Length: 178
Image (cartoon, rainbow, N blue to C red):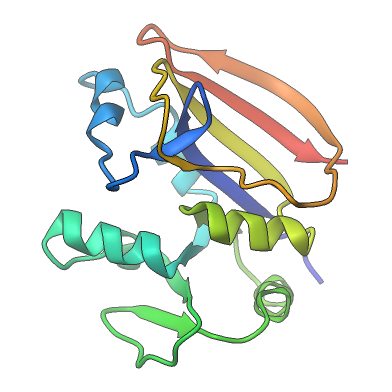
């Protein structure tokens, strides 16, 4: 087994929301600044596999007019309950997520990037599969919406690594599982 890690790399509002109830993500634009990617390009160089939930996948397709940008750079898995044919560089996975992660980690390669959806995050947390949490806190309180952490999972002890604060007010948190 090599040292591949599964890393949750995601943004949320200060009050813990990923999106509004109707999947609006426009509030993320409040931190857009020309020439600033908040370390995303550098992070992307450390991963070669991408895991996302089906609802987030469908939302991205809707927002991009039917394309899935991560599939251009990474091997992509969409976790879903319904059988579906692979499409556009994306594999749909219906089995036990712990088996998928174990198999990916056995292969040679870079780290595994997990993004999107409280359900997929909860599932990965329930199986104790997330090795690192990199969470960009956007300086906004939405008051309502879709939460990143849904609760009802076991306690996860973390070690904090240095966070980074940006001029826009975004703070990038970085934790590793103990």
